[in-house]
Image 1: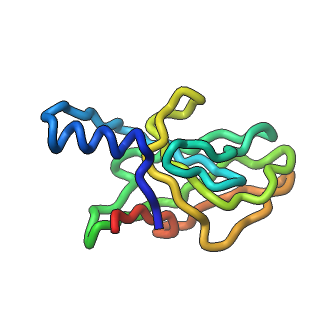
Image 2 (image 1 turned 60 degrees about the vertical axis):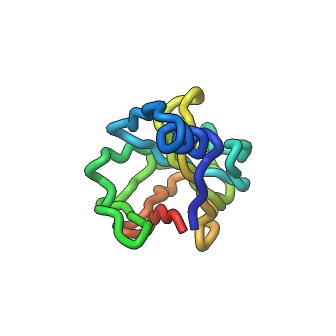
Amino acid sequence: MTAFSDYLENKLLDGTLRNIAYTPVATTYVGLHTTATLDANSGTEVTGGSYARTAVLAAGWGVPAGGSTSNLGVITFPTSTASWGTVTHFGIYDGSGGGANLLYWGQLTIAKTVDSGDVFTFPIGNLTVSLD
């Protein structure tokens, strides 16, 4: 299950109730976390060891049905050059850098320890964003 960030909750309320436009981005970025991310983006994102958020174009997400969507292609992170620790959560951001806004976050079904030389991937359909 995924959750909205505080940032996105406020943007949706502004757009639907206050007629303040929200401009979505053409590319989202998936990040990996070693602690719960939470709505306020307070989790611990992986750093170092060649880690970088991975871009997903808008066309890389399936057409929503029943309040959810998932990735249409494999989401592949760079090969780690050091241990990233145990990845337990993910975040979806509107940018690749530290100033980007968290949009959604969720917990992995199975935590994964990422060691040097590992490649972390989300296979097709395995990263689901759901609004229920």
